[in-house]
Image (tube, rainbow, N blue to C red; front, side, top):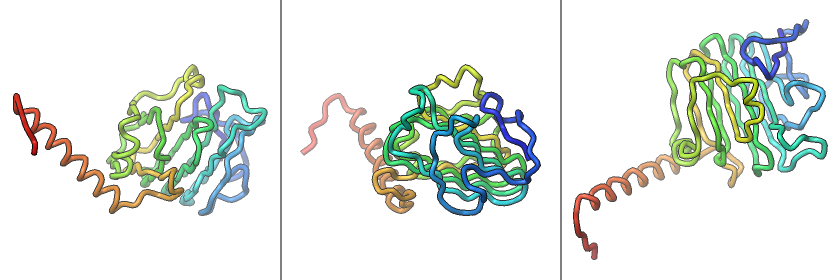
Length: 216
């Protein structure tokens, strides 16, 4: 297994003798991981495995570390050579933007939960087999993001917004993690909200067809 560099995360590594890397903990099994600024590594958090499924909740701090440079984004690297990837990015405050790099080269499914206050860029350098957006993602996140097919460049390190890059040829699903409730989106409620928004837009379009409209 190899360790990536932030500059060329898709194919640049340092050699390692272990088949599984997970920092700051020693296992990549299901569970929550608290993310902290780590000045001694290229990435603040790395979870990489050859064959296992990666199922993690990444808990971002509600504060900036005292020694964390102002321009530094918390950076997280998640890689599964042959397994599924399911990752939630959880935060209660936008104290600092983050960078998440996800790699699933085998074509296995990737499911990401992004915080509802996410604002920035989602990069898809490799076209996924299918891209699905949940109702919660569409309601809360989509209005504030930009999709890009271009890979991240070295000079993008100064980018001060949230950023996700996904290298996965298989199906990719993007969902919402509710920062107010501290839980994943409630599918039924978000679907209802999406339907109500669609109905409101249709009503506005119909009203726009009239030169004068009095609604009693």
